[in-house]
Image (cartoon, rainbow over all chains, first blue to last red; front, side):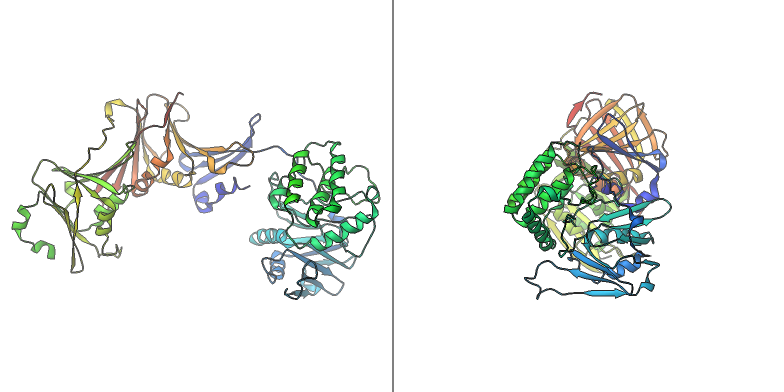
Length: 327
Length: 286
């Protein structure tokens, strides 16, 4: 994306001069061509290299979500405005009487130093309010801010679909010419046990997605049966406490683009997982991520929640293993 | 004006006297070539030529005809000296260079000859400043041997269209490639986007095409398809001249040498020229 943005930076000059913009890919080049047809017959052509990759697909039925909120982007922006820019995650709580947002901090070590903020809104404030299950979901605020500023600049309403903690939350905006969806994983409630997942909340937009607004998060999923029971507990705990820290560098995650499926990778990922018990929390998260990426979604095992993303390849695992050495 | 009260006798000792009511008519055009500290001044009865060079590969010339000056007296056929251009520009702007209408700095530039400093009398609002800048022996400017008979391709464009292109072009690219051709793409700039070297390895490129029948194109005379590459670092200073100009002529000769000529209108609407010569980086066979 970084290569493409500068081309569209000078909006005023674009509005003044450009009559038409054409974006095309001509095989066999690995280049995308962005052409601006300007006044006076002048043509500006930019060729940028790209790499093929499969886009992640969110397998998430937002219409089945028990809870739905819809509000102008402005309202949601005003809500998140109260949180410091550095705030990583927030918790959205919904009851029949109110919707509230509060900041989320990991661990109890320095909780005396943090400032806790909570704000509540009455359901009437929202254009649409539907509550199926009372829930508290915790997700990454940074990702949301990006979408909200985009929606606000286009004066679009934002819809929020979610369910219980642990299930993904979906933010979407749409108008006549575009539809944008951001699916974020939410933190699972640390009290609950069982085969459902430890979840991931951090993931930036993958660079392969042409639509900048459609960010998809890989969700960690573990085959409970293949892991030792104590691993699960350890992992669950570790995840809950390590949510606050920026464990994974966006660049690392960006490399986790799904590649060609290779069933051999599953075993490699297994190893990564088992080594998790001996490595710090951060690398555990990384390992889990691999696990999810490489496991197939096909089995429809009832004990497992659907995997939102799949496929990874060896290079990337090596990279992340490397990463975990440094954390 | 206080400057005119200088006794006539003084003038006898100067080989060159040039006066301007508005010093900006000189300073603006000199800024367009001020990419190096030193400039070679060469005065003839026709006017003043100021030359700045870089590593024998790039040469910029500013031409200010005698008619531009309110007074231009020269007692020899040719007067030449070298002077620190940065210092000269600082002096010309000594009153702060305000652009308030009606307020301008008047200039009287005097030179006694070899070995003497260049004397500038500057006046604004009744305040007079005298600056004496040491001169050096003028170096011989490089002769690029660029003559009209050797010109293979020539286009004249309105600067407006180029100004934007150059401001957008990735200036960190090392090389600018110019193609001129009697057939498509007629007139094209290509820049390789080294800055955008992505993790995918290969960098991209950008090219700007100007068709020969564009209404920005005032003259299009290309006989032969030529593609030449020039170091961006050499051409960058020319963007200052481009910014001031209303028209630019781009010519290449059979060796691939580039001549850029800019038509600049000063504050009073008079015309001056700035010219850049640049040698090619490497011949590219089309």
